[in-house]
Every structure is written in C-alpha cells, then in structure tokens.
Length: 465
Image (cartoon, rainbow, N blue to C red):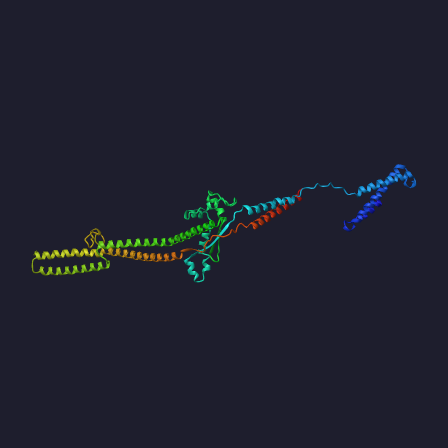
C-alpha cells in the first residue's frame, strides 16, 4: 500500500495541460486496482481462506468472482461518471422583447405621428442689418470690420435679443394689432404644437423662441430671421410684424441716443446763457444807477471836474484878494465872492472824496444825485468785477455753443438705420417637419438607451452575490 501511494504521488503531474489524458488513465488504473483489492478482501471474508488456496475452476469461487467483478464495474462507473446537472427550463427571450418595447415601439409611434398627425410647418426667411453713420464713414477707409464688432454689433445683438424676448409679443399686439398667441392656437394645428390662446406671455415665451430663429453674422453684420408657422400667410404675417416692431425699436434707440448727446449740451448752453444774462443785467443796472458806461471815463470826467473847480477857486481867490485891497470886506461884492469860494471849496472837497473814498459812505451820492454810498474806487472795482464775470460768462457761453454743435454732429453719427435687404415672401411648400430624419433619430436614440440599460442590467446580474 505504501509503495502504491508513493508511486501515485510520484506520478502526480504539475498542472500541465499536455498530461491531462494521462491523469485520466491513472485514475482508471487506480480504480481497477482498488476494485481488485476489494474483490480479494471479499473472497477472504467469504471463505476464510487465502486467495492462493482458491481453485479457479471452483464454480462457487467463479460465482463469487463474477459478483465481485460486477461490483468492481459498478464502482468504476460510479467514480468515472460525471454528475448530471438538472436541466434548466426555457425562459422567455426577454432581450429581444425589451428591445422591441424600448426601441421599436417608440419608433413606430413617431412614424405614425409624423405620417398622420403632424401639421406641416412653413418657413419664411428674411435678412436685415442695423447700420449707422459712423460705420459708413469708416467703411470708406476700409475699417468696416472693426466697426462691425463694436457699437453696430451691439445694436444688432440688442435687436436679436429683443426678438427672442417676451416684450416683442406685447409690442406686436400694440403696434400692429397681431396676436401671436391666437395664430398658434388654431384648431388645425396638431396637439403637440397647438397652444392656448389665453396662455400667459411668460409661459408662451419658450414656445415662441422655438418658432423663431435669429442669427447674427459677425463678419458681415447681417441678421437672419426665420419664422416657423403652420400656414404660409401666418408665417409672412408674423415676419412682417417682427420687422415692423424691430425697426421701431432701432429708431427709438437712435432717437434716445441723439437726445442724450444733445440734451446734455443744450443744458450746458442754457446754464451759460442764464449766467451771461445775469451778469449783463447787473452791469446794466450799475450803469443806469451811476449814469456811466465806462468807469475809466467816469474817473477822467471826475478829474476834469476837480481841475475845473480848482481853477475857478484860484480865480475867485485872486479876485477876492484884489478887491479886498480897494474896498471894504463887508462890501456885497466881496461877500458874493466869498460865498462862491466857500461853495467851490465844498464841491471840490466832495469831488475829491468821491475820487479818494475818504468821506462818510452815507453821504455819498451818484451822478444822478441819489445816495448810493459808493465811491469812485468802489465803482471802478465793481465795474471790473462785472467785466471779468461777463468775460467768463461769454467764454463759457461760447464753449457751450461749440459743445452743442459737436454734440449735434456726434448725434448724427449715432443715427441707426434698419435696412431689410431680403424682404419676406410667402412660402410655397412646407419644409418641416423632417419626418424620416426625426423617425431615424428616435430609433437611434431609443436603441442607444436600450443598449445602455441592457449592459447595465447584465453587469449588475453578473456581479450579484
């Protein structure tokens, strides 16, 4: 037994695929040897004799050997027989069935919808541009590509966003009398595209954006408008309404920009004019009160008056001294001369006070005889101040007028023009919906979803514990 075990251990292969058949033969030989040993053991137990003492011709021993051989065959067959696995019941082909439900059925539904239910859609295309004076002037210099990406591009984008907004729906109804929601609520339109006529503008806006396509070409500066409707006349009517309100928007933007440029300059001109009018009013009031146009002329006149009074005073004093040596001082003629001298001295003192400003201000009078309390230096200073104010006011008024002229020129450059160079026309055939293409898209999309779901399910099932 130990030799056989050692032999079996020596004959065990090292898991090489080329010795697989040898392993099966070894297993058969071992099973046969084990069956022979079992047979010998059974014979010994049955006869109580050694195997060598048995007679091979003995019928009893032959019967025992036959039965032992039968058991041996049964043992060998039981060892070499593979276990029988239970047969699995055939289940439904769920993979094709699920593909039919997930891909084929939606495709059939889509095909039936586009074939029998979908309403034809007509498309009206129009192209327009927003231009200005600044762009025209620079286009002559070959710089139109620079302008298209600045102010003019911004105005075009404003119009594009305006067409996609909900405000245009209200403006179309107010300015043209066309109710867009009534057009897309007609009973002839299929259920997927028909809208409620009383639907709020905020909810209708998304549907409106899907029915109007606006694109801006940054190279040429042109805007392409495409409108989808379910009758040719409705498509053209909606396009005309959009172009009308868009042109009104561009004109209002142009007018507002022009008013902004001119309004600020006009306000500055009005302020400068009011300031100049105020200064000139004060100057006229001063000249009317002082009865003098030029303070320098007044000073020259006052100087000449003082000189005349001094000359007359000197003549009277000389006469008074000449007569005083021949007649009495109480003579009437000398009294008259004395009173004249006193009057001239008083007048001369007043004139000098007006020139120097050393008298009581309350006693000063104007040339018209009114008490003004203003001396000649004050008068000259006041005239100088008003003259400087008038000069600044004139300069400010002149500058504001120049700014106004520049603003008017700049406002003319800011004028925008809405030009339609591809007018809308009523379509002849319906280009949409694309039935075959949309059905194919449904088939491909549903098939992709089914493939993703199928492999996800198989992966989860294979990795389930």
